[in-house]
Length: 64
Image (cartoon, rainbow, N blue to C red; front, side, top):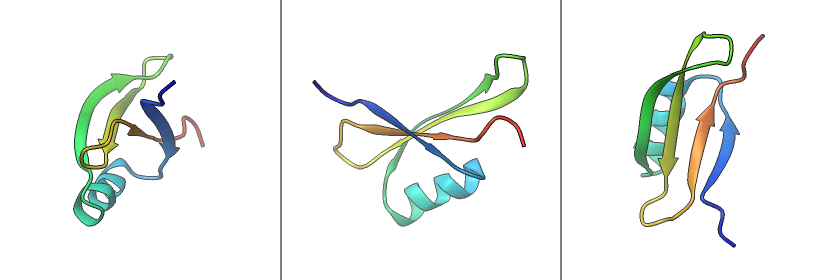
């Protein structure tokens, strides 16, 4: 068995990307526009440590 993706809730996509990519040296695997189930805009953001198989989905909580 292998874990390919884990989720981490973040407050701000851009700040989280800056930290993981700029500070920790992760690679930005994907940053794509997406929609919530009720049609609101969001992003699908995945980062991964260099040479690792497991990515981290950076997710913002849906709601207040």
